[in-house]
Structure formats: C-alpha cells, structure tokens
Amino acid sequence: MFSIGEFARHGRVSVRMLRHYDAVGLLRPASVDAATGYRFYQARQLAELNRVIALKDLGFTLQQVQAILAEQVSAAELRGMLKLRRAEIHAQIEAETTRLARVEARLLTIEDEARIPVDGVVIKRLAPVRVGELSGTAAGYEPEAITPVIQPLYGDLWQLMAGSGVSVAGPAIAYYEDTPAGDGAIVVHAAVPVVADSGEEHGFRVVDLAEVASAAAIIHHGSMDDVLATGQALARWIDASGYRSVGYAREITLEWSADPDQWITELQQPIDVTGG
Image (tube, rainbow, N blue to C red):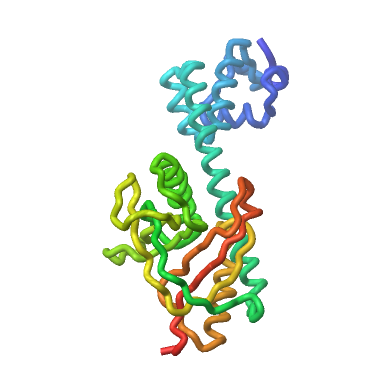
C-alpha cells in the first residue's frame, strides 16, 4: 500500500489531483484510515490512473472519462483513440495555420491600403486565344477556396496534355466566372493556350477565349495564396482612374517553380474604360 503522497510520486501527478479524482468518484483510494482520514492506494491502481490521465489528455471531460472507464477500455482501444485525436489535432493545427495566414494577408493589405501603384499598372488589349482547359467549382473566390480546386486541375491538365500530342502555345491562364445558380460558388478554369482545333476532345476541352478590348494588368510576385494585396491595389487604381471592373481577373503564370514564393503572375482585370 502507498500513502497518497507516495502514490502521487509513482504516478507523476499531484496530491491535489488525486484528492479531486477521489471527490468526483473517478479514482477512489483502496482504503481510508477511519481515524486519520489518510488515503492509501495499491500498485494495481497505477493502471487506472494511467488510463484516467491518458483519456483526460486526449480531451475528454472527467465525466466522459468515468463513462469510458466503466466500459473497461483496453490499451488497444486507447491507442486507437490516440491516433484519432492526433489526426484531429493535426487538422486543427492546419486549419489554424491557414486562418492565421488569411489574417496576415488581410493585415498586409490594410497596411498597404494607401498605395495606388500608378507605375505598376498598364492597360492592354487581350487578344482572343484558344486554350485547352479543365474546369471545377470552388465554394468561393477566396484563395483558400480556389487553391484546393485549381492545383489538382492543373496537375490533371498537364498529364492529359502530355499524352495528347497537343502543343502548348503560351503561359497558363486561370480564369473564373460565377456559377449559373448564382449561389456564390465560382467556376474555376485551369487553361493553357494550345495549337489545336476547337472542339477537339483529349480528356480536356479546347475552347476559344474571346478578345477583351481593355484590361488593367499588374504583376504579382509570390504565391497566389497571397494575391489579395496585389488584387486590391489594382482595384484601387482602377477606381482612382475612373474605370469600372468587368467580371473576374485572369491570372497569367509568367514564371512557375516548385517554390510558390518564386511565382510571377500577371493579373489581367477586364475594365470598362468609359466608366459607365
């Protein structure tokens, strides 16, 4: 038998914690001295203590721990709970990392609000172009919604093109449009200029993008997950110049590498130069 202090040392917990577990009926001492009220524990109770601590550290409440222990959970079942909890924690970390990245992007944009990149924007005509493309649907226009859709589309498109014999005729073009349902979802087009007949089937569509008479263009350096500041700087320039945006911007990949921080992308925002 161990005194409560000895048992606490062997279990690597505090005496206060053991008293609390006793009070809530989670881990009772093996015996209590009627005269002194001293608690005593047996070595076999270390196994019960280990299960309590493990379940508590997995995020279960003490009430839930009590219910699980009543079912005599095995070591194998605890291992399964640990694997599940580990996956949940990793998912939470990834979600929080993504959320913090979004906050950082917004903060950079806020800090950059006063900048109107007069020298960084040009107005150009976008010639009609024939492209091979794959399309998908994103829940919204935010980078965190677009990226998981467009990256697999381009991966599939490059594989299909490699086996199609179709020649690439220019840098990749990503473009967007609202879904017919008008529910806030976005149709994502992953496209590449090609030399091919319109309507040919290669596992991807061959379509013609119409001419755009006027587009305001700006260069974005780095990952498209961080495009917010550049896109909003372009929007401020368009507004300050008395123009009006028309639809979504095209994204032209001028330079690509395995490191997204090295990407160079041109944003081409169609505009109405009459301001009407």
